Image 1 (cartoon, rainbow, N blue to C red):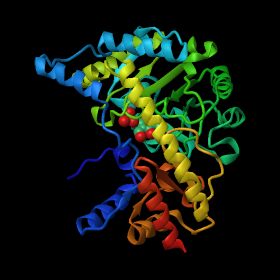
Image 2: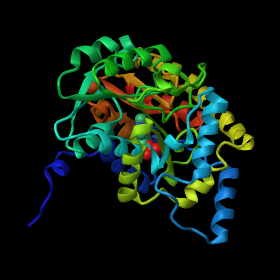
Image 3: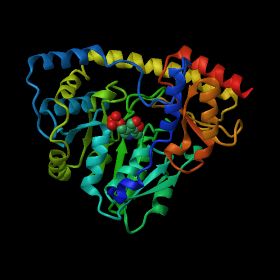
Amino acid sequence: MLHFSRRAADIQPFHVMELLRRARELEARGRDIIHMEVGEPDFPTPQPMLEAAARFIAGGDVHYTSGLGLPALREAIAGFYRDRFGADVAAERIVVTAGASGALMLALAATTDPGDEWLLPDPGYPSNRHLVRSFEGVARGLPVDAASRYQPTARQVADAWHAHTRGLMVATPSNPTGTLLTGDEIEALHRVTHGRDGLLLVDEIYQGLTYGVEASSALSRPALNGADDLFVVNSFSKYFGMTGWRLGWLVVPPAYVRTIEKLAQHFFIAPSTPAQHAALAAFAPSTLEILEERRHAFAERRDTLLPALRDIGFTVASEPQGAFYIYADVSPLADDAEALARRMIEEAGVAATPGIDFGHHLARRHLRIAYTTRRERLLEAADRIARVLR
Ligand SMILES: Cc1ncc(COP(=O)(O)O)c(C=O)c1O
């Protein structure tokens, strides 16, 4: 007798995993596959962080930290907000978590009762709707497209809001579209959520990975930094190149700290201690220098891949300014993006993620293509796709 909870039965797998399985099979037979489905930087963790972790581990004193994270790391993150974004964020309201994933779990666990609805952009990061479901909330997609740079507008949120709406989740830069919200737009969204006694959660996991636009934080806006209903998610995964270490953070309004602490203690006891010691070196000038070089490399990759995809015939109606994804409309080339993704793997040896992983709205028309691989490989991929479609 199997006993699956209803919530577990509702969780959908990543469709891209099917494609990945096929890619692995082809690779096992000697085919060269260019991986553009991957949502993580290909660069290794920067050396200063590896050395900090190695020094710490060599000491052998690998014990639990406080549930909210190492005080020194919380202070270092507060210092990062101050130095880079001119934002005064008290270390006491910074919670170190198991990636942005842990931060999202804690924020939702602390605020969501059964039936509470969260508004989120469609397309958007897939796990959000499943996390909302896991805490017995209801995820409601707001269809977004290139006209609003794939970000929800204040009007759209106001129109969708009803008595059971608990809040709005957005990401800037966004996954899968790489598009940004301006500070003014975030403030406008907050005016809507605040005016309805709701919450605003801003996922800044791709902060730092912006091209031609300065990195920013909602917390650098005085109207938002002091808000008692704003949660900001961040992570060491993307800009800091630490995906596998599983470390991120959550900035919470002061009144929520104790509740989040209780949840964090029971969910996780504490975030990974070696990862936290590695992250203590994340904000050192020598590390930031490496990270900025990588940002330039990502910008070059975007500037290589975007015109190459457009030359092939993909439509990219809203230019990505951040993260490392291009959300391409395949309709000039194919009727169904998932079928095209399969063809790309089989015939061109190129893996990309079908739009259906990110929601429903125009999902069958889109592919997410990640530039998390070297420039030469991106050009090679574009060449191969062009040959298949010719
Ligand atoms: C928008 C967004 N939020 C959160 C996450 C979770 O990342 P992590 O748990 O590695 O920090 C991801 C991962 O791709 C993401 O794209």
